[in-house]
Amino acid sequence: MTGRLYALGTGPGASDLITVRAARIIGKLDVLYAPAGRKGGDSLALSIVREYLTETTEIRTCHFPMSADNDEKAVVWDETAAALQHEVELGKQVGFITLGDSMLFSTWVFLLARIGNPEWLEIVPGVTSFAAIASRAQLPLAMEQQSLAVMSCTASHQALTEALRAHDSVVLMKVYGRFAQIKALLQHLGIIQHAVLMAEATLPGEQCWRNLEDVPDDQKLPYFSTILVNKQWRNQRL
Image (cartoon, rainbow, N blue to C red; front, side, top):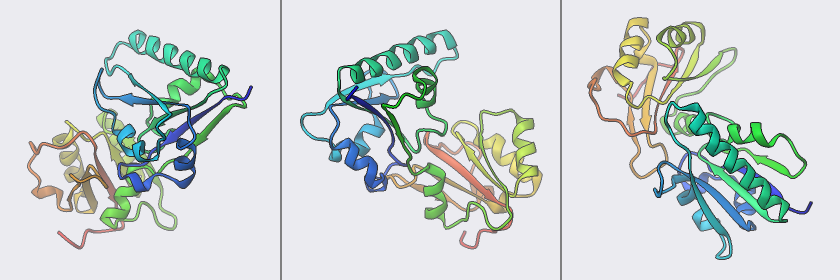
């Protein structure tokens, strides 16, 4: 089989934070699959890689439902995985792009579970959003013997509390719509002065808050908002 499938992390947002390897692969693709947030909607991942595409690359946007209906989501994952495999069987160079890294909180892993690990598959890592945020905010993710946890704020209050107590550094992803609860938890644990909130890192609308106690509970945050906590690093610039 001459066809190949590449799962490509596009990085956090800025087009020049995609890896050189990913950019080279994207430039030789026959077909590119790009997930979109809604049917017929734009794809941020596609906008990141567009400058690396050739005019001959066919682009296929696909929508993955955000509903709680697992059966509905499974149908789309099954159909997309089958379509990717069919393209490869036709001998095509096929790409599937995701924001950040394909193996972290990504739709791609549900496709991987269906595709398996065939020889014609290559997964290319990407810069994670929290790695970009740590650099932009100049806040270390972890130092020396520190432990690091990466948590989704959709986790239970108990799970988040345990992670923040047990680990020196914690990444809190998916803050959107949950900021007031997370802020209250950081205050309760006495570590809010060690936290940084950033939204839309590396994008034109990037915002950074270094003193979370001054951020209103009802602050409207973009969907791509993340909090970093490092208990051994107190914010110096407020």
